[in-house]
Length: 428
Ligand SMILES: NC(=O)c1ccc[n+]([C@@H]2O[C@H](COP(=O)([O-])OP(=O)(O)OC[C@H]3O[C@@H](n4cnc5c(N)ncnc54)[C@H](O)[C@@H]3O)[C@@H](O)[C@H]2O)c1
Image (cartoon, rainbow, N blue to C red):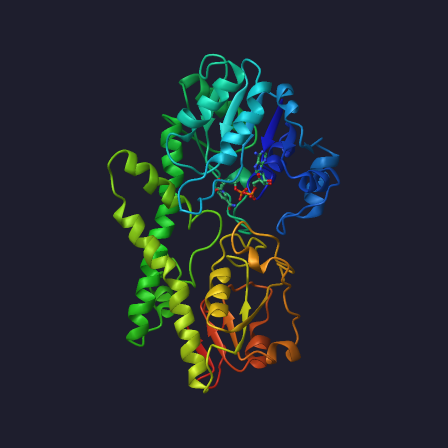
């Protein structure tokens, strides 16, 4: 079997590797020539995917990458894993999905299966993508080609999260489309969860991410309330999670980050308006989560003030630029918001992140592009008036950080268990 995977990022690349390992011939398609060249060279551009892992499937399983969408005509199935961000006005931007549809449509042959994996609102597959594919190919979905949606459940850097082992939800445009999509994923994934339509599959992914967003908002709110009472939220969560049923721990932080949790809930909010429905719960969670960086900055000001300093003119180091521990992904990272808020108040801001040696041009916060991580040594760290821990990478030595810094604001409980003199450590 030959398939195409379009969009070779954090989702598409691991999926391509898993299909290649299952002896499916995979053509990876991407608009980014640099990624294509690296893949064909057997070199990974994602920290948690080793070069050897990629080189093995390129060398032994015939995985190749290309920017030539004409390859689609050689394939029995096309899986789309392109970005679904929000626009400047915080509305869904499905232009990457539609552009991909336009690129593949002229090459669609009768009987081809097209599956969308990008997270999106219900209706994207059977309304928007279907229209683009039908217009560009002259074929009819469900009759001439098959169409399905199957959400990705990738959790980058989570050792337990293996593409093969994560149950995969699949919804088809017709029962035949579902059957074809099940046959495709059955080759590479152990457990499949068929649902009655593309829309149910799209809605399932949104429920999963909204569940996280709402629960994170809850612990962020409790962090403020318990903090005012002198109670440490981290200690409370550790105790609560000993309950063997009916509780699942979520952790507070400096704000939401990544390509999913800060974005996906608003795909539903936007679509719900078409049906005259409000999403108050989702929006309240968004409001609480987006207020977190301001709370952190207020703690930074308090900590500096305690040693007779102002934010203006202070040197502040953000420890951790990635949006979560142990990954090199800094998209939508709250660290950018913190850097912006602090520099707007006159602070001199730098960052340290072993996984982000230099800031690539991001879609947002482009003013930081080209900035480099500071070096990890006592002399460099000790020059800062305050260190703000925004991400807790396991490879960072927090004992050293604690010893080298004069004042630390910790948003991740990274210094838990390290004894420090009064006034040096501030939780936020
Ligand atoms: N990263 C995650 O942990 C995660 C988890 C679950 C779901 N998702 C969803 O999966 C989708 C992809 O996310 P990602 O993190 O892999 O994004 P990514 O930015 O890492 O990768 C997307 C890739 O698509 C390519 N691309 C963009 N436009 C294209 C086009 N027109 N044709 C071909 N390639 C194109 C980009 O060059 C890039 O390599 C998103 O909808 C996201 O919400 C992501």
